Image (cartoon, rainbow, N blue to C red; front, side):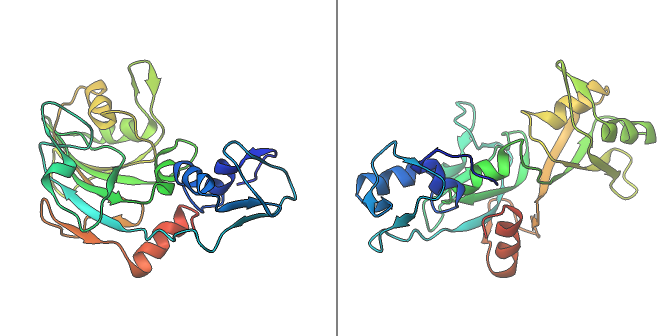
Length: 236
């Protein structure tokens, strides 16, 4: 990403994948960030050609990433009608969910303490695949697959083109791969095509797959899988 100068120091550090803006602000408050060998302050501007350095005393945050199989009935958002995701599973490190998966859906969600990936994974300016298995109340036709792939108009908006295919010989179940994430999007797309979703499971986020995890279980994302994930997010 090309940086446009002048730029606030916290945003500069975030765009260079050093820290989130919030974490950068904490480092600035502690006097650990320098611009041209002078201590930065909150709101400092970086000009093109400036030398930005981080003190050796700045703590190195250890990032962790988990693939978690969120159970049905659990919410990734504060929802009075469902248990919060962090109330149901204890992770070794304090983490938060990236993105949402409503209480009526289940499957893969990424849990991490790395705030840098929130924007990279969720912002519409980036294109990343998320794959789901969907079961509807009616059998699906070839025309349904064709229409949903082409984009569906619902609530005054048009969804982006996507990938869809039947799940084997099952007449009422299909795979769909989206590169956007509007609220309850798949349900609304299906409703616009006169089908009701009765089961919705996320099975993949980019290169991370659910990989046989039982409901409520998680695994550490590491090694080559993690390297590819961060590379796709342009964080390495």
